[in-house]
Image (cartoon, rainbow, N blue to C red; front, side, top):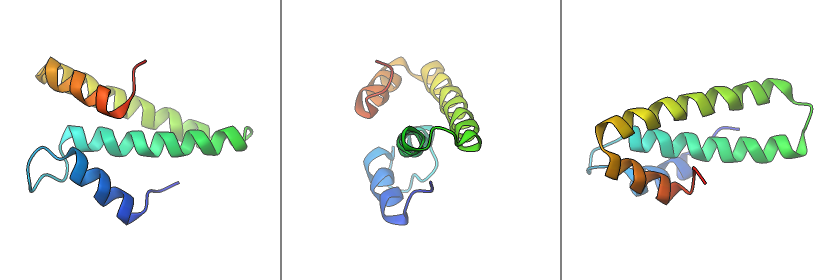
Length: 89
């Protein structure tokens, strides 16, 4: 369920904070969201793939921790990011 190099580059250019940014929390959350979405589609087709389900839950937990870090840093940045990604209802 890994992302292709081209898709990673697209996400990177969309969500990077500055020109040389490759690992900020915003970029990491965007990458995790793409992986979560792809894995969710896989699990809808393969309901009995329990090891992938466990991996999905780990990714969701990691994204949740990064989002709470962003929320502590800047509420406006947090709201903008979840709005762009379309997560949290």
